[in-house]
Image (cartoon, rainbow, N blue to C red):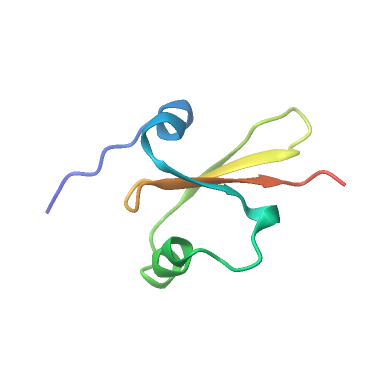
Length: 71
């Protein structure tokens, strides 16, 4: 079994595939659907003091996307 490398959120943004902002999706990307179906553990981090921007990362599928929670 291949050992999983956990990158910092900043490193993940440089190394992993960006799926953009989920707020702009009209259809969920295949990568996200397949990841959810495989029940991969994804991690997230709030990027502002008020929690308006969140980055979500899957270290197995090597993608990330952002979520804007502002009004």
